[in-house]
Structure formats: structure tokens, C-alpha cells
Image (cartoon, rainbow, N blue to C red; front, side, top):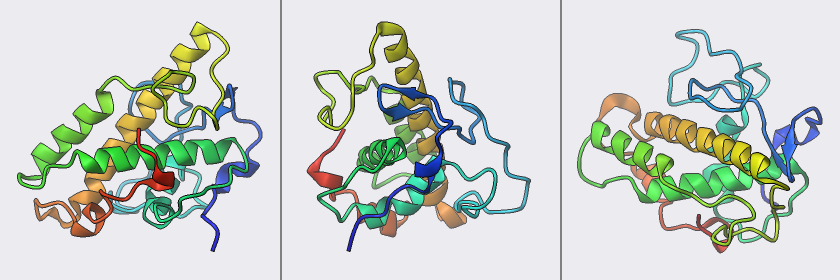
Length: 191
């Protein structure tokens, strides 16, 4: 069975830095990404994603939807730039799940995930980036800075959405179904 690929592969009007897409996001976090319209209130609970046909469905919804299925794969054929964002997002979610405190409530979990998202991180082209063979380096310092800002925006928004899914139902303890994937490494890599 093949891994699940991005539905955003057919989007050709997305700006690329090196071979990484700067796809539009539904976010309130500042950054270079074009902002998609927010979801109308009371349409979907915060722990779920909108329908993929909805105008506000973005790659981060797809990352969270495909994370658990794709973590079982050790190989992933990259079919386009959107798949690179999917790979980076899945690796980022894996890193964030490893930072969730087992004890403590939702507030502690939220603080831990936001702090993990804001930490210094490597971008494609840096020596510490685990998938440099699949990602091109930015061609100059300005592109590198825009890519770093975009990836920071992606990481922060993923952390916010992951908290909503981890602590769905208001129980105050993280979901065991999400935490069961903390030890799995997508493609045997981690950020």
C-alpha cells in the first residue's frame, strides 16, 4: 500500500523557495503565508478539519489528517512541492508530540508545544536538516529568511491545532490515541 500524498500537488500557482512551497494557510500567526479565510463560527469543532473541498482547507489540515497513517511508512515518493510540505509537517508533528508532557493539564501541554514550535530549527540547506537530499537550499540569504519565517509560521500553527486535537473533549489529559505515535518516526527521520 502506498503512502498518502498531498491533494495540493495540482496547485501550480504557489510561490516556491528552492523546491519548498509557500502555500496559503488558515492562520492568525504572523508570517509570509497568504492567509485563507477563517472558518465560520460553530461550523466545525476546533479538533477537526474542514472538508477538503472547503475553501479554508489548508495543508496543515491535511498534515494532521494524514499524520497517523503516513507515520507507518519508511519510504515516501515525492511527487511535487506539496509533498515536501507534507513531509516537513509530519516530521514537525512527530517532534511536537514528543514534547507533550504526560502529566499536567491542557495549559502545560499548550505551553510545551508552543515553546517547542518557537525553538531554533534547521531549514533546508542547513547542516542539521535531516532531509537535505530531498530539499534544495535557498539560493540567497533573503530567501532563506523568508523560508525560516514561513516554517516558523507552519510550526506555530501546527502546535495550536495539535493542542486542540490532543485535548479534545476538555478532559485535561492528552489523547492516548495521539500519544501512541510519539515513538514512531516517519521515514526513520526526526527534526
